[in-house]
Length: 288
Image 1 (cartoon, rainbow, N blue to C red):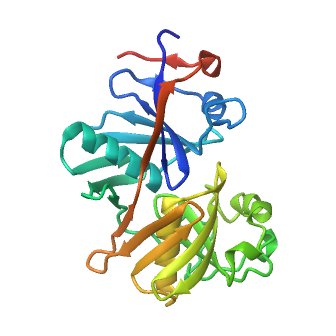
Image 2 (image 1 turned 90 degrees about the horizontal axis):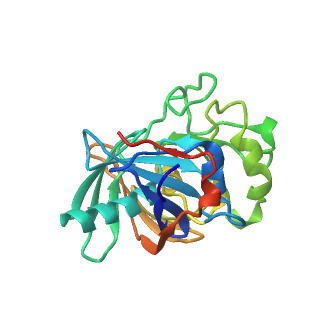
Image 3 (image 1 turned 60 degrees about the vertical axis):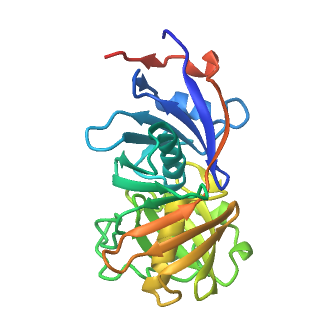
């Protein structure tokens, strides 16, 4: 490999990312290198690695890898960080981001907060996806996977598959223990993010999430969207919800005119650097 790879370390409510700019010089990363970069003991440390690539349809294409090296289709907190970078570059408060899961529109407010249009959620069993037909995905029992005592789970796809349990106290359950078991449950052919949600008012939730491929996270934007939507479907809250995560608050609006989800929250640029060469063993960069 020739040349070095610069990065930005960013976070949205503590959900942190290593952001690479591959718009001029494409970067090919293997799963092992992604995992090495994301390793918090020996690498840079992050929940996801993000690559910015050219797009024919949007201002940028955002490629997303979880800390285990697996590629995923959406990350709401990363989208806010990427949107802030693009707005700073372009001087316009409105930008568009293409992902594997679809197009996202983003707006940076005067207060510095970022609103992402996460598009409409999907509820059909084969859109989440689940491995068999369910006519109603609002409440599905998972007794075979260590979910005993949690009750039924709501299933939603917001760019990623989500499984949400509504409980009286999100701190009263050992999510770190059963989260990875449920993530790999046969019901989820693409695995799933596992969340515990607690209704704290008619327009507020508390949320903890085990993120597939990343583990316990301080914030998961798509999980916040999924939990808010699931709460509305169950009649637990209204369509405007403040979701409190370990890292802070996200405001979720599930718009009734077109069913699009609007997620609003902060971002932060932590620092910039160059990836240490020892983390890039076997990585090749392609120059078109």
